[in-house]
Image (cartoon, rainbow, N blue to C red; front, side):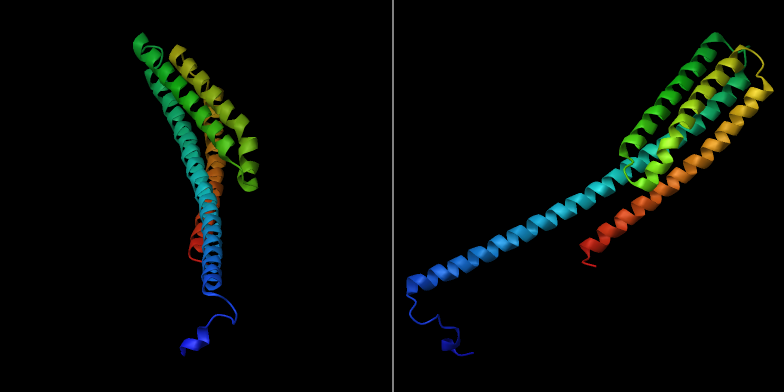
Length: 193
């Protein structure tokens, strides 16, 4: 390339040439900064989506674990029965109360974090079932520690456990599918796809 091929326009002073070069360099730098800011904002938004998915998966997993723990409490109370020492019966009641409280708090976290329509569609109708199951578990524990458990009450509790298990599995599947889609979108965006 010849030196005169990149010469400045005729009639420009050296000072004007330096000013033009500085202006172009500054405009380029500002454009790059704006692009970097935009990329950073989009990246942060995608990271926030994935973080919400993690919180949602964690909370829904906690609901499911407490659902199982309450079944264990009901079985333990049936095994202990009214003949168990008062301290053991009280400990079972307290443990059941903690599990109910943890399950309801975890479900409130699910309810707060669920923003996608496909997840919200499952969460809304699930709340009364979660609350009802916690109440039924506590009643069954109290009943089992007081005397023989009514077969109908036990069968109703078993059915509530199974029904809630199915619905919690559907919620977990929906949360996992949503999270997978968000992770895939974030990966595709970062890779420039």
